[in-house]
Amino acid sequence: MEWNGQTRTCGLIGNPVEHTLSPLIQNHLAQSLGQNLVYVPFHVPEGGLRAAVEGAYALNLLGLNVTVPYKSRVMEYLDQVDPAARRIGAVNTLVRTGDGFKGYNTDMPGLYRAMGEDGVKVTGRKVLLLGAGGAARAVAVMLWEKGAERIYILNRTPQRARELAEHINGLGPQPGREPSSRPLAEAMALEDYPALAGEKYLAIQTTSVGMYPRTGEALIEDSAFYELVQEGYDLIFNPAKTRFMELVEAAGGRAFGGSRMLVYQGIISFELWTGEQVPPRLAREICALMPFSK
Ligand code: ATR
Image 1 (cartoon, rainbow, N blue to C red):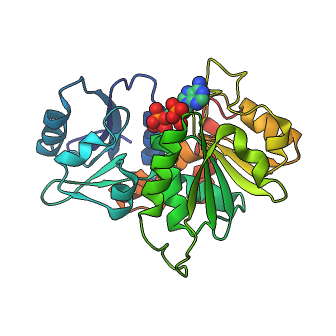
Image 2: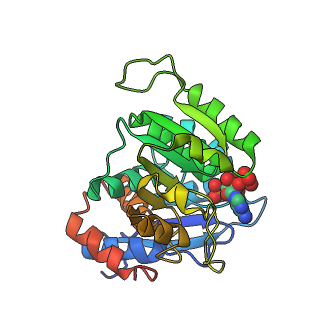
């Protein structure tokens, strides 16, 4: 694809942005699908967010991704925010509209698409959610929306787990499910999992424990915990196989890493910007391009 006077620009705003893999994903999609579009990183220093969003709109940018530390703050400068992103409290994708940008969260649809591909259902499942930060909140909202049966939130700081459980339980009845008298989410101390024995769970690891360069660590080491896990997702994508994933597999469960969530969030952003559907073949091709895929 030759860039010319018709070329549309998308990009990523954040601080830092220098290590991002998004240009690799987005420019590969644009090239493969013949879209006259280019995607570039924009380092936005502290204090520059408002000017960056307004400037991007003034420059006729088609869309933006948003990363740390601006995913929540950016909502102030948007014309509209998608309700799912509002519930999550974080926006990672801006789509140009007639009056400004509309904000979406494609991280969770990205995770959900990866789960669908793995044959992992969420509806009716009992879930162990490790962590209670921003990523855990996003996952918990997705679990609420997709009809999980129960969410046990395990976190180092119990107060944060309680706050997240309250937020989820305050969302109201789950779409498409009979209202239940039992709250969906329950906070637990990290060491309280023996109380859950006797069932198999879907586990989702959202903390930064085990991320490069501290790759030998897992939030919970005890093999008794991993006996509870039927499928384990780690949102970390570097390394490709985390200690958490190794422990899940050692106990006989299926383990999945975060690189496909990363690819799919990018694909869903691209689909929002261009209106194109990305074929599964191309999604697989991009997953194989990821530097940590092996
Ligand atoms: P993110 O937006 O990526 O979720 P965050 O909001 O800072 O980031 O949340 C980080 C999560 O990882 C939290 O659940 C945090 O636990 P605390 O609430 O107790 O801080 C967890 N976490 C990070 N480092 C940890 C560590 N060394 N041990 C245990 N938990 C850790």
